[in-house]
Image (cartoon, rainbow over all chains, first blue to last red):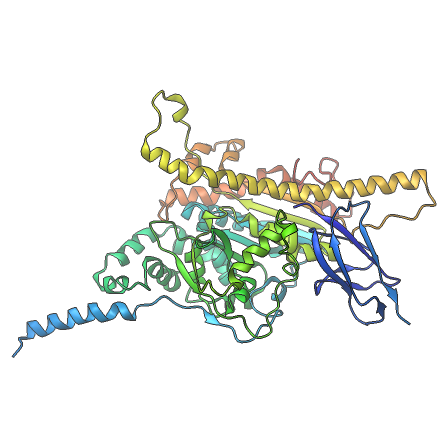
Length: 73
Length: 487
């Protein structure tokens, strides 16, 4: 029942995919169960890295796990 | 030469020998190709113009035979008579119902509405609630024509019950019709006897079985959901090899790791893995009440890792309304007034119900706590942002949720009848669990539902908040966010 918190940073608003499922957007706080996930962004594929493998645990709403995608040139 | 009498006798004996071999339960169809965008799953369902995601409503109908079906029917009537305004549009509260999770007796109301919609209010009361379903089942059971079929190891009392429901109640409808009708998503809950776990009739489960749900009769799912132990027998499903291209649900991937065994995600993944293990070639299902007599667990799953979670993270849900229709009974405690210890049958009856009653209580508590935790998190975030603005105005603003949610958990049960003038809770709390009730009992059950709903302070708050929003007025002071759970 306890939740963990994740923010995927990106210069633009883009949909976030968790294990292939659309789940909110970049730069907003996502609430998920703890555990291992693969995080990437929706198209277009102009971001880097391609994906993050994260182990989401020990976060707090005020201290979410922050991962940052940058715009690929 | 054999006499005519001897020939007839030989034919009858031959029929009794051969017929059992012919009788077999309806087998679920195999799926050839996996398609995550179709089938009976929430995300594949259309919603009507009157259904918004911003007001997201899920109903839970408990078990309890006709008593539960009648109470939930009364609640459906009440929702159909309640007019609200959302996003500038007048509609019935019923139009906003997005999912119904049901168990046993409650599954009849849920499935009937899912299939036939407004017809529920026209013929369900006479066609099911006031009908002697138990007598009709017994009539079939004692009909000698059926004895040969019942002698088959692959055809049992539950299959006979499912045939009756199919013909007389559900018009031979399959899940394809439920799917065509769109929201609400009806989750019919049963219990897998092999692993003592909840099973629900959704395409997500059937995907793991390598099977198609669309061609499966709704009547058999309702029969499984209401297969009361001993009186009825299990409904069986075949577990096929996975369909081509099968992809496990997003939350399943990476969930089964030894270090995660204490998490609920791990537990949910273990539940699904039962069907992915193809050594388990058959699944035998009984009354959903054995694993969750409220229907709350599938809604909790949707909140934790399903269609509710994705919509919360998308910021689509503003008000999340969960209505629990709990037809639980409670006999008056005479044991505590007697010096003599209870006898064998009393102890046996208690052994069968005590754990489940406590589990049901915990399920509703868990719903409340899960949603209230979200409220507290939102309040902490707001307080922190306000404090930062006050103390460090130049500091970057903290990242926030896509949208805050305003949750409501409304439980309807007979104990609350004490709040309603002229009503005696004991009348309802002593009612039997049966598929045969008198017309008077049915009428009273149908009538008490709307009264209980309207008397619930959480419901009153929800109506006030929706009305204030519709008129662009401030939120009523007596209904702060969170009052929809703990008023």
